[in-house]
Image 1 (cartoon, rainbow, N blue to C red):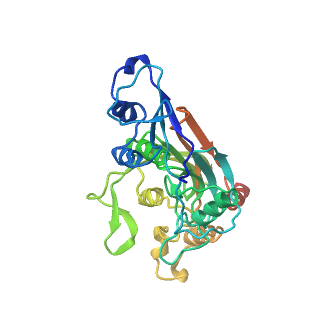
Image 2: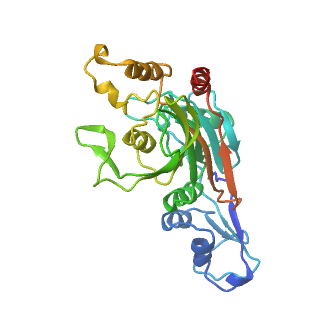
Length: 324
């Protein structure tokens, strides 16, 4: 017996009376060619008024079109108990507040203790079968809002919004120094560093990248709480861009302050030592995905998901306020 995800339905309007079912599926429901091929091969994949039909039939106003996708399992991911901070969940979507230090998906050398391991265990404890489909990714040490699709249709639709640039992704970060001006755009192409492939850098021949920033609160000239909006989604984009304007994220071990280039601590002045002290006050880059806004593919409304600033960054904020 085949198991299916909850059906996704569409009621045919007067304007589509007499058009092909295929047109309704692609133009009104936004079913991709790849998914359409899968649905055609599924026993109850495409239904019209409760009956399996060919996509070449014509529809009438008032008809009910339904698509059903077979349930999938993440058999390649080991279920593992984990405390999850769930911000939102329905039968199509799961949104969590990812803890700092957590890898999103198993990779070579990291097969356990990832967010995927915990989510798959959480679903299986409820007797549910979903394939883990993170709609976007966060660096291991970046905390905050992360959305996970429960079926390929939801993943496709939100991914398309990402590509179209209609998803609003906002972060907060603690950076060295206070950017001047206190709001602006960082429009710097990004590509791999040829000398260190794991790093990224701003380079004229890189991929177009745009980050908008705004200082929320300065701290005595030595640090600032900054709000950032991503207009593109390059690897390490915020970290690379803030470093490129000489305001690297506090605690970032990869994109460190240029004063670290001094040969030894003995050569460092008071300012440099203060920067090192700030970096050592948090065990990761001080970056948090604060909110995520997109159109829910089923509800068809803009939804915003938010996660509070985590404890380690709050402690650093308090330290900065005391010295302000």
